[in-house]
Image (cartoon, rainbow, N blue to C red; front, side, top):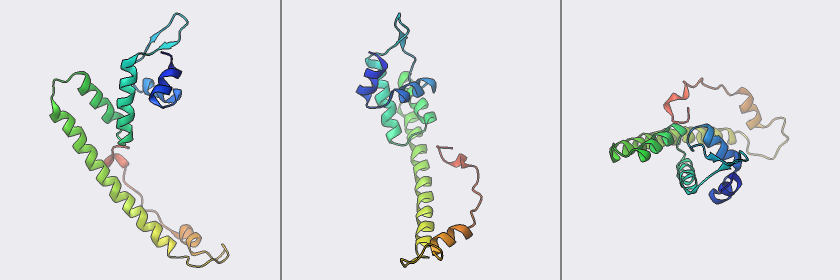
Length: 144
C-alpha cells in the first residue's frame, strides 16, 4: 500500500508517517520501481502501536524501548513494567507541575474581578510584574 493509504488506515497524516520513519520508530518500507514507498500490514500494526503509545503521552525514547522489547521478547515483562513504572512517575511529576500552573492562573484570575477597562486590569498588571523562577533543566520529565 502507498503512504496515503497507510495514513488513511492509521488515521494520521503522511507527514507523521515520514517523521516516525525518520525517528526510527517505523521501519523504512520497500520501494516500488517508481521509487514510491510500499507499506504492508506490519507497518500498519506498528504505526497503530506507536500511536497508542503517543496517546498515553509516551516519549519517543520510551516507544523505542517498548518496540525493541516487542521485537526481541527475551527480557520478559519486567523490562516493560520498568518502562511503565518510570512513565507513571513522569506523569505524576507532570500532574504536580500542572497543579502549580493552575494555582498560578487562579491567583492571577483573582486579581481582576470586574469588567473594567483593560488598562487597570489586575491580571495584566500581575503578568507584567510576575517573576518567573528559573526552572532546572527539564531532564526530570520524560519529555525533556
